[in-house]
Length: 85
Image (tube, rainbow, N blue to C red; front, top):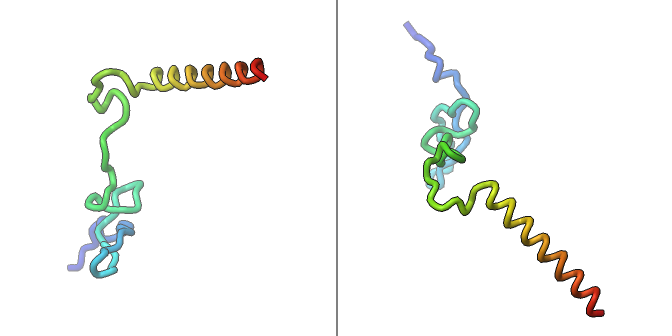
């Protein structure tokens, strides 16, 4: 009997081999266009789920504070240029 399994009907990976120029043809991960071997679900999670906080340098609050400071510096330089001329 020829049973058809769900992975046989699933969409295929869109990655292409550099050597043979053939498509991968492994089943793609749900919600992705590539298989698990070609980068689907790769990378570390964002935020607290990552668990790699060391110094708080790259938290959203720190980035926002640095942007605000650089904006204030830019405004003060422009004001000083206006006063000097």
